[in-house]
Image (tube, rainbow, N blue to C red; front, side, top):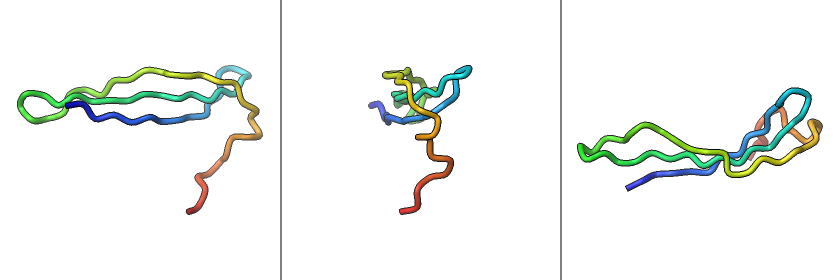
Length: 59
């Protein structure tokens, strides 16, 4: 069994602002616990810095 999620992060890379889409996962071990988290970058897109929200939107 594997549990996973997709996360999205905006970050500065040098002078550029990038939007990363990540895959993160953990596998269930034979003893019932969870293994080490792992993942990879699925997509990287340029974005304008002024489009980055500084705080999370309120529901």
